[in-house]
Length: 233
Ligand code: ADP
Ligand code: ADP
Image 1: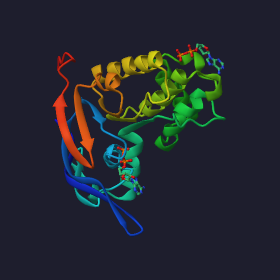
Image 2: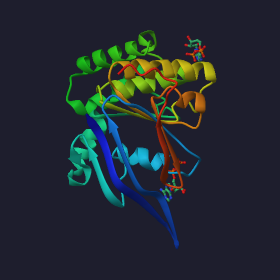
Image 3: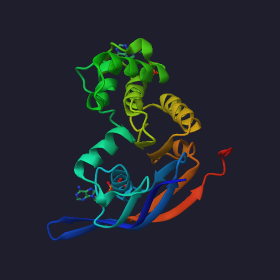
């Protein structure tokens, strides 16, 4: 079943007298459970498309359908709820609160869920356990390695059990050995049925995905299945 569909979406930025066409009539459909990599040169529109898919930005024209809802019909409150519950964001720079422990960082998205502190901590600990970091619950980010920090960020992205995971250069700040361990984790999430979309410019990272979409100058240049992955679905 289709979870994401953009119909001829464009995104225009006005910089003084200059008009930037960040996305030009992009139509793409993504089914539940797909694992997609967005590739393309810097400035090709990857982050703009991810931000629109993640309801952090809206298209200048065209339609975006998420889970059978036209996003332009949703209120700001409904959008905030979707961002919090339906979508897990993972960033290159981890975006963890430096003074908070792993457990507190992971529990943060649950503050809006109306759970008791005890329930929040229990769920955060379970999410940390899922990424193999239950024994680092009380550590602060600067007491963790880069790979561990990214795993904390992934646990935070997953704590509300979102259906979609959006990762913008999730391995951009990691050495290759650590990057592969993060990709193993994404593979497990994919095997569990999560929909994963990641931006990367590294071929060996993109090849973990089942589908590779290449953008150039705000257009989809290529959209193809990755034949090197055995697709058992
Ligand atoms: P990518 O993620 O592929 O590097 P982006 O989606 O970030 O590309 O950017 C696409 C184009 O839109 C680029 O030309 C970029 O400079 C421009 N752009 C992105 N965000 C903004 C913004 N907030 N204001 C103005 N221009 C922007
Ligand atoms: P990973 O392979 O997950 O990136 P590393 O090999 O970098 O992990 O780290 C090995 C061990 O060293 C880990 O148990 C981690 O907790 C510890 N460690 C790494 N960096 C720090 C740090 N800045 N302060 C305290 N402990 C650290």
